[in-house]
Image 1 (cartoon, rainbow, N blue to C red):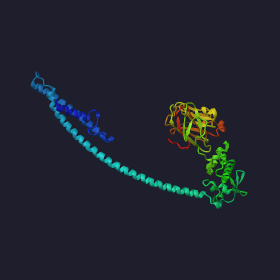
Image 2: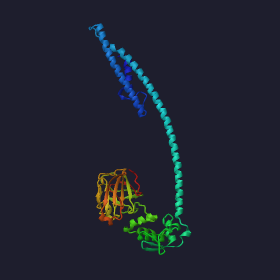
Image 3: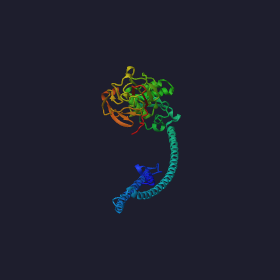
Image 4: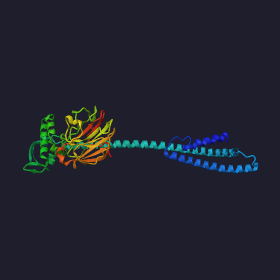
Length: 436
């Protein structure tokens, strides 16, 4: 085979060999590439057919030449087929080059159309974002107007706050100045005792009849009386914390109904605690090896379902060294160095539930709290159940023991760390950061 033929063959192999893309086409969308590969495969099949035809022609011509020249002087196959192969490759390479040019032109057209489409999409996206921002501003403005109107309706005219309210709350009588009961601008008490709505309250013997828990209502009345004299009186905090455990649920229901925010407390980690854990805002970090547990300042709501979660920021050993759950009390002294309690239900990373306060459970025991894991617990008040979540996906439910109900009127969120340098972020907002 001549040098020119070998060069042509190498060029052809480089263009279509090993399934690679045609020369000059280095990137593109999948559809264009598939089209080019398909055409290259058709060209390669065509080449094989031509070569097979040439082989048969070479065999026939060789037989004819040998017959003409005689058997004594055989003719070399290379000499017979070199001219035929060279001419065939020339024609095939010309066809390949033509196909290349056509594909290049097609690809340039695709690139032009893509540029136009991307420019149009960017302009459309910009217009959409601007429209959304304008609409958001309108909605926010309307919402502010609604809030102002709502606040104006709640705030009672000072002239209407004169006089004494004679109240009968579930059999207990109260005589309270109207200005005392209506001092909270954002409370529904303002609306309840306004001139428009007061007439709708049932009366008997010149007293307003209210169907509330009388003990809880008495605590709110006492709070309002002290606040009316001095808004900074330290006794206010004592009144808020004086709610007995057996009234906690009723107080939460009444506080939400009347929107008395002083008794609706947002939970957080305590600033003072008897452990070596480092607490900075919502973050808790272990300083040395050994169990250290910490509970939230306030228990979970007994009036409505509640949810809290942690995000694992650092965890050198996720197998059995990190706990999350609830306790029926706030541990002190040596209690902070263990995780099994009679009134506790905690999930130990990679081990499952520990504690003695649950009756039945179907919680997955093989969940390890590696870095980046979000582990949450939902407390269902109706059936006194704890539902466990990992990254927004439920992993099972544990039912609290009915015979321990008196010990579990208060359930404190609890976090336990065992390994040095472990760190978690605790969220009591009630929102699940990784929704299903």
